[in-house]
Amino acid sequence: MADPAIGSRFEVKIDGVDIGSFTGCEGLGAEYEVFEYQEGGQNAFVHRLPGRLKYSTVRLTRPVDEGSGRLAAWFSSFQQSVKRQTASITAYDAQGNRIAQWNLVDLYPARWSGPGFSSEGNAVVKETLELAHNGFLE
Image (cartoon, rainbow, N blue to C red):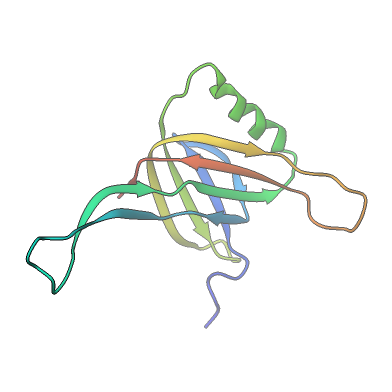
């Protein structure tokens, strides 16, 4: 059986608009803050209570290509006003079969960083897009 993660890529759409294909995706996660409460007279354990739910910033990376200028311009368009949007991140295997999809709500771009160029070595030149969001949709 083939490993579904080998050669995977991630297609990203924001409000139905395709913003490109990415080769790396990190930060699809969430965690509850945990508060500890020490009850007087209860020495056997400490109560651990759930607090707020926090979502990680999603970090997408890809090699620079002909669409990199459009991505930077799209990011800059939020300078006038930030409009929260919905997004989908879909993972595909090397054969183009869909592996999984995550839908994000109240999303906005938090950071874009372009490539650093150097004539030394032959490393792949990459760009990064970070997306903040307030949760997952089904």
